[in-house]
Length: 184
Ligand SMILES: [Cu+2]
Image (cartoon, rainbow, N blue to C red; front, side, top):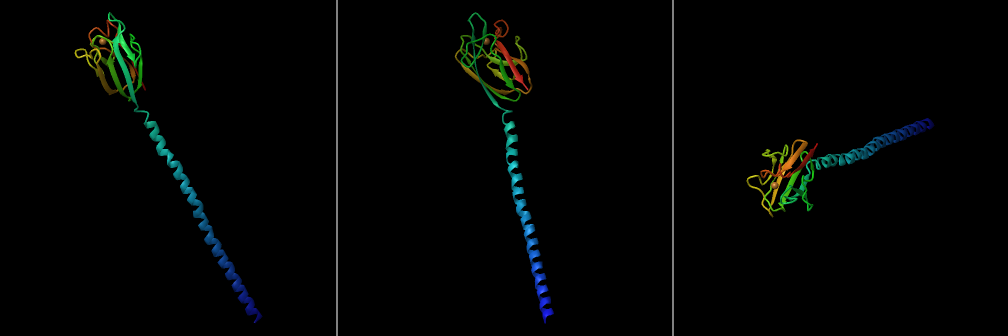
């Protein structure tokens, strides 16, 4: 009788230990996924700013540059030149610096008395070909006194160019030009 009770007690003890082990084992894997859950959320957090940071450097690359340029004469007998914003007409005109790929919007107002124009060329010489579709007016159809013209263009190649007035003699005899620098 006593040995049967001992056997029963051992069986109960073994069962209790076995159940305890099952419970412990069941809890251990459940603790595993619970620690994995925050691991999955932390990789998501660095991923979120990563797509936004590549977008930020892309934005400034094609920036839009607005330039207000005045055309006119230093004196009516010459020289002729340009001014940025509401500055004084200078000859040669002020240096303009942009970057490759910039969308350049130039608004040119003739504040002088003679007709003038604007164009970018390889150099300031008579009859120079306008580059990049950058013309405002032309030698044969200039911007007359008091009028305003606008052009939008992009320069695809870095370099040192000239901006000129295409009215015959203005870029050469009357030094109506300036440096147009396009940086990488
Ligand atoms: Cu001119």
